[in-house]
Image (cartoon, rainbow, N blue to C red):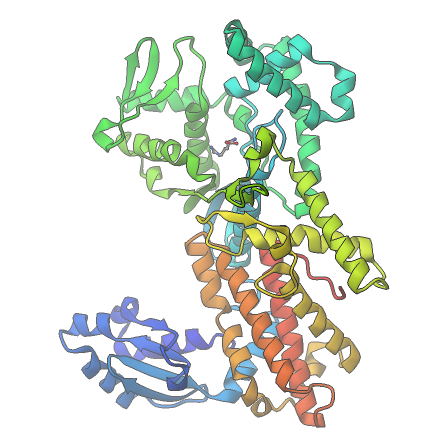
Length: 574
Ligand code: ARG
């Protein structure tokens, strides 16, 4: 029995009746002295038309202690429950070390989730702005996998449409293959900048791009098609670098171009639903009756398709291919209207699929302007794009310097610097609620105290060190053999925090909020640090030592799981 909360919930369901399940709302008590978990009786009282304190008193009086729950006591509208200390310790430690649910990966849940994330526009650099979608989406992918869902992580590359056609035009006009080969992303970016500048002077460029796109959309094996293939291959190769460093993988790399032959079918459905209207030669869906002023354009007057057309085709394709329960789009807040339109269009078409679509927006990355001291949009620094790999390199260089100063004898310095540098950025990104802007500040990110990646990693390394010195058996059965869990009554704060894991996982998944896990890891690290500050492990008396070693091993395992889920490495030494 690892799931104490689940145990309490099922006892309450048995006592109150299955029909009351949805009213069984457990939360942390206001005051921890009162108990470990509180049942708020407001909803139950409403259902039975009585006063909450009355219900609370009745539930507490009728509740019988068992091998897991020691007592139930009413406090106003709440019932507070207290776990037996040995049960608290046994369930957490065994559950974590044996990797049983809810601490270990869940068995298949039968749920299917599509997560559209990262999705950069190719032939443009993978810049810092794409990092958030990549990091948040990858964490959500791992969290849903851990919870037993069938997950389809999709990289919806921007490899079609006018933005791509502009790049193609620039390359056809000015591109040189040998320069591209040298530094593909930087070279493409310089072409992109040049295109922007020249197109501002010379409108014929955009016309030329439109013709190239039209030629590409004919589906013929022409010059545009060859160039498309070439630029796409080069970009994908270049993106792989940052993806590898961030430990990110996808289940499908199906960009906008993948829907080339699927857009006609999607358009047919729009026409059949009777919602497509003509406006100056273009095909649009008016959304005013859905409360959206801006209509959705699906076909331009020259017959070519748009970003929206591909998202519509993609939505149908994903529905039919993956039968998803949820379709998440991890895309910045600036595309809020785009997803509102997509949903509204589907609602207007009478497609139930609309309900599955969830835009998962996020805030900006901000950097401090060294002159004004103000926080501003990161990428706007001097008008230049900031390349993600440069930022990762800078983080690693900073960590290398810290290691040289603090621990120059560390054996695998390079590897550790890479792990800590990259993960400090990931951790910083996933620490606050995703809708908040992320402040990008090296000193804070790389600090070893405070709510940072290095702080939690340091806790992990410290636990690894203790375990190594203890020479305790690695094998879980021997580690747990004859363990007296009563001896861990003094570790209740660590243990209760561990038990928050399952609730946090549910919340992170439901609300698409990896920060819930990041914060739990900060809390676990904090609790185990304080515990170790007050209690000896290796110098404790034999039975106590054995129990504390198991506690250390479980904390280490849980931190490793949590960091793994958010995509942060856990080196044993740092
Ligand atoms: N390529 C787009 C951009 O960089 C993001 C695509 C997001 N996904 C989607 N299905 N629209 O802005």
